[in-house]
Image (cartoon, rainbow, N blue to C red; front, side, top):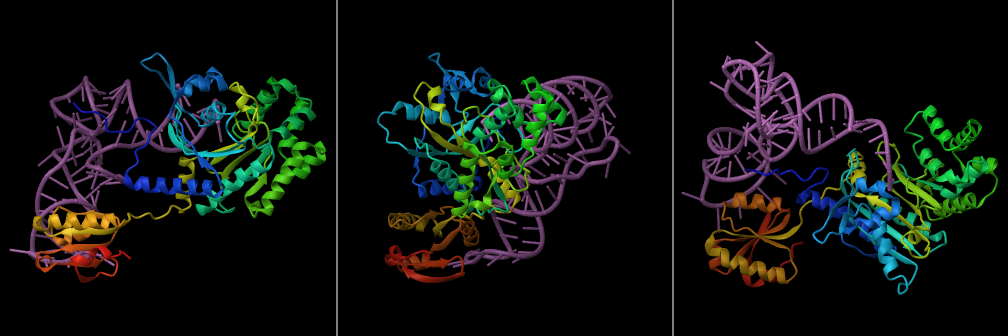
Length: 426
RNA sequence: GCGAACGUAGCUCAGUUGGCAGAGCAAUGGAUUGUGAUUCCAUGGGUCGUGGGUUCGAGCCCCAUCGUUCGCCCCA
């Protein structure tokens, strides 16, 4: 009888080598977040199923990892973090001091078919500013994620932030006199623009009550590449002014090179109410790396009062694929200060004692009690990334001495055991 | 859900028309009995994803199933 050793379909194992890379990414996310004054929070990966069903209707149930627990409760593994954030905020809405600047790195699950850059499980950096109606919230969110991008070595030549505004799309749809109650459905169709044929697109738009003339005018708008073009056709409006100042202020922050207006950015989620953005690789070979925007009415859908909010989600899968494609993954070696190597069992108690002493000094120390030939022991020590090897050899030990070998320079010195605790690795 | 390709040692992969299960790297031991980059030798390691079928004989052909990858579809 044998069991499958493979991870559950769509999930990953993280061996130590993989874990170093994951921690490198998480460290960047955490450090960038802290630099911007964001506080970390978390919640359990298990949530009530209703949290997601209430949000988007029953349709999403098919993509939930869900089950009934022994108490008959409907439970789901969280597919995204925002509903949990909303729950946490609503729970203490009256005692929290707004605006909140919170971040988290949750593992999220979706039961769905896998494609490049999408698995059934991933980690997704979430950063949200809750309770800040001013556009400065958007600017902080964008600056935060671009700072993280920079920390990964990604410049404007690698990635772009495509910025749009739901209010602009509404204004355009009003302008062409599309039925107001169909705006959301039309936006969903527009989101598919690149994936279907023009004929198909026109047919879907017609289903949403757009005449051929209206569709033609919409397509004219969607082909526009600059705000000025839109302004000339649509006239001044709140969304254009907002986008203009957003781009100007990014420019002033030195981040303008990353950002551009992109009228085709819609985002699938229905709760966005203003600015929307996506980060894509410059070669456009991968799916969106990161996406977000303003969602001022989400909390009210959970039964609270409206609270202005801006946030983004940034998954670990696509970004690591991009960094790999660009050759920007860091070389991460194991790190260890001392490898303590007793020659035989006779020196083992001494090794244990010395290792413990060094560890109490805060040093990282690995012991090798395999008593292999020194050749093998040193090879092993090198593989662990040890900076120094402390060889406990019979003759020296008898005189209260040990051999301290520098693994980089391959030089060694004989040191008294009594002074070992003062040794530094570098 | 649809289509295609793939699944053989820890890893990367060969395996001819159906005829003894292979290589490189890694591991372990030795050459070198107390010192890591080179070299040489040896050793261990396989349900050939799984289950059926055809056949004297299947890693190879057929069916099913699971998994992986890619492209659609769908969706963040």
